Length: 328
Image (cartoon, rainbow, N blue to C red; front, side, top):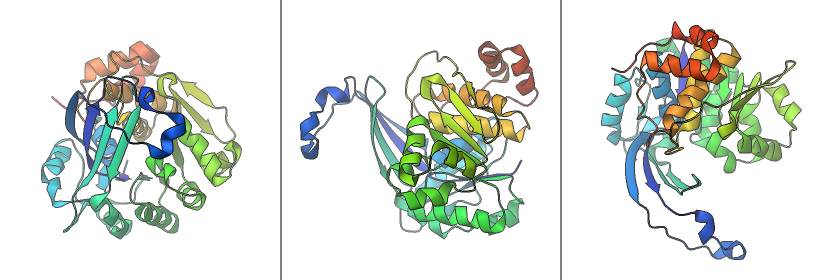
């Protein structure tokens, strides 16, 4: 399976606040908000949605093509991704800007307050997909992840123009995009990824009903947090898959990206949508149990056994022949 993963490439600065943000919010004073929180720790980790997804795919034995824009400070990060089977030859390096940066604080309830510096990511609009396809071959899918909005529009339109099947994953950009942008990003997608809140936001901003959104995409995948995931396909019965119980919930950043990696890996192995959702849930739980989005280690035996514990032996047999030990 040839998969181009476009989107953000960033470093994550992750902090933990032992209290609850809600205890410091005064509802009728939100227009004058001025708060600071004393945090317990700071972790600096590799991140960015596209890089996280590509890392997960690489860990499962695939070789995704990462497409995005970075700064000259990307050297060590590039080496890390390449060691984990990610093709970084189509990453654009800016001559003037730093790699994007995500700064996030989680409270004791796993609520988040975050900021994102785009930096070199703004140059993603300069990337054309056709030369990349010329290098690696026609893609089975192009995932258009959260990125510079103009870059996302360019990638989506090029997919339409050139007939590349694309996956819409607007994610964080939904909060900033208007209805026109969102409609352009998702109309005609083979797969649309969102969480439950984002799904409602898509409908509100586009003016499309749930059925109208589904009519414009091939498959709609909605993650439901601890409740798992729901998969909708036009003309077919929707189904839900429960989440894999976590050993310990540590940090939620990047969980959705890992889910997408697992889901797409299963599609690459020609497995069913149900197995794809299950594999996505299993990879996602590896992230929530760690600090950082690319800090998990997979081992074939333990990974398959945990899949069997969650979804049954028969389901596990279907993935066992594909999963390898990607990291010693």
